[in-house]
Image (cartoon, rainbow, N blue to C red; front, side, top):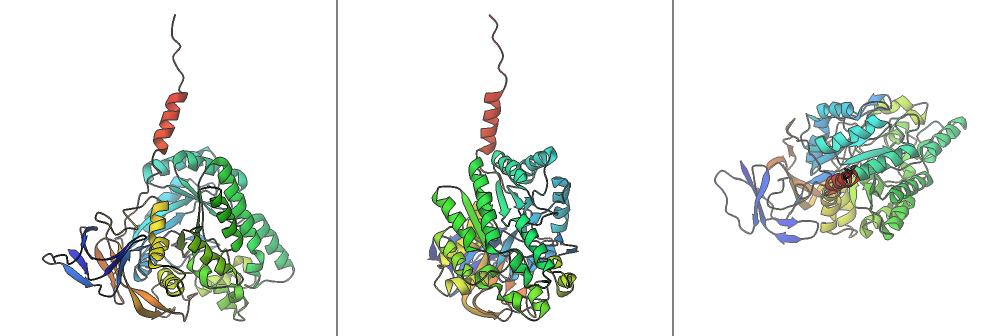
Length: 480
């Protein structure tokens, strides 16, 4: 079956123009004005609407085992909700337990993801180090299309990567043509502050942001960036939430260092007052790391997006329901960290960014899709409206409205951090692999339709390594 999106305005990260878009066999087949309608073609009327690349969320945690429980959203429910919000691909995280083989963990996550309704890829976390990790990283890059590895500088005693691991792993990433990504919080400081607050009798959610002040993110961002810079490696900082970290990124980029930053929709619009809600459950529902920040940091994040120092937007979608959050009723450090957002990211960014004049419509496409595709080597298969690109598209109604609520969202969680917010600008239709999967409130997500996306290492790296090996090989000694 083919689909013709007719009468809309195509928007990419650089261009805006009136055109029809014909999709068939899973890809974009033609783009042009007044395209003929093939026999049996289904038509989507996009009059007065924008036709854009489907969103790519570069930071999700579906079905994640974490802090003594498992995230309530699995790969089907989470990706189905993503489609309802205009997001057609995700990059999730394989997180091996310390001592676990990276390849074994990757196989486990692959099994969980077989039910996904959208295309998906994986970052793989480096939670420990020995020669087997070094070998597994190469296998993942060469044989499984993984080109990014995650490093948690937080969560002491669990999955925290110490400086020696950062050095080893960043160096290996550079050799392999992969991107090191980093959760930048000083885990030693966080642990110290958590114990101090508990000793002072602060056990509720209000202590969570106090245990992770902006300085611990700024310090860790600076340290990770400088380690990468010393080694000559690129680096991508996930969920940047503070002015401190934005400033570190901006300074490094001014020096010519390849540093990239991601921010979350929630961090752009919410502040730390959410933790002072007298209702324990409401406050605990917002517990995530990094936490929501004091007023003023949101403006710094918007400036980071506008200046190009932050290139992507994500959600860190990691759902825990009220009964799971209650595990930390007597101790805030035991509240499972995570909030939702995969269904709401694009609408919130449009409403708070485009409608206010902070972002152009082309900026919006770049920040929700194209930049992620470029950074993680998925472009132009993803993040583009081009002939030959995957037919993952969203028809965006700039005048449509929706009031966000846990009562009506498709995410498998009983809370929404954007509860009651009315947004103007919504996905009217979502097309995935050339099929419409969301239309005017009707969701047709298909369990298992998602495909694993291999992401090649960055061009030339393997050839360079092979050339180095050839040059360094022992030479035969000529006989005289």
